[in-house]
Length: 180
Image (cartoon, rainbow, N blue to C red; front, side, top):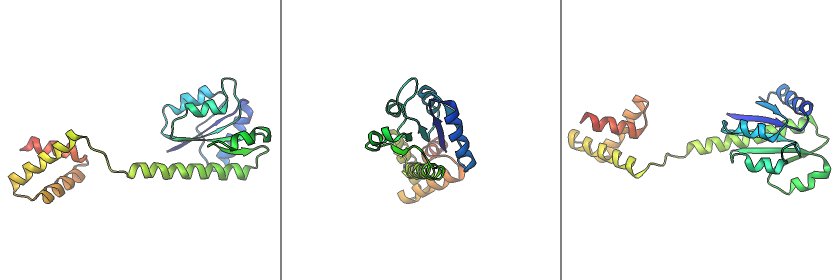
C-alpha cells in the first residue's frame, strides 16, 4: 500500500493540505511538523509519498530526502524563490501558490508510479540460494527414483503440490524429502 505523509513547519498548513487530499479521495497517513516525525513513520512503511515544505525546525527538505527509503518519493511545495533550486533535483516540485487540482493530480500520478514499481518488484521471480536449489534438486531426484518420473514431471509435481498446499517450492521439496 502507498502511504501519503504531509510535512510542513506549520501544523495548520499540514492539516489543510491533508484535508484537501482526503476530500479528493487520497488517504493521508499523517500531518507532521518535523522531519524527525516523518522519518519515524517511514521506518515501518513500504512505499509512499512525502509532501513537504522547504524547511523545518530540525532540517531542510534535502536532508529529509536523504533519510527517506528508496521506495518513497517526495513532492516539494515551495515558493518561487526556492523553486529553481528544487526543480533541478530529482524531487517533484510544485510552486506556491498552488492550485488544488494540480496538487491532487500530481499526488495521484506519483502514487500510480509507485504502484507500478511495487507490481514490477513483486513480479520478479524469487532468487534462490544455492542450498535451496540443492533441496529442490534432491526432492526431484527422489521423485524420479521412487515414482519413475522424468525431471520435468518431478518439477511439475513439486509445483502442483506447492500450489495445492499453499507453500513455496522449497518448503514442498523439504516435505517430499521427509516423506521418502
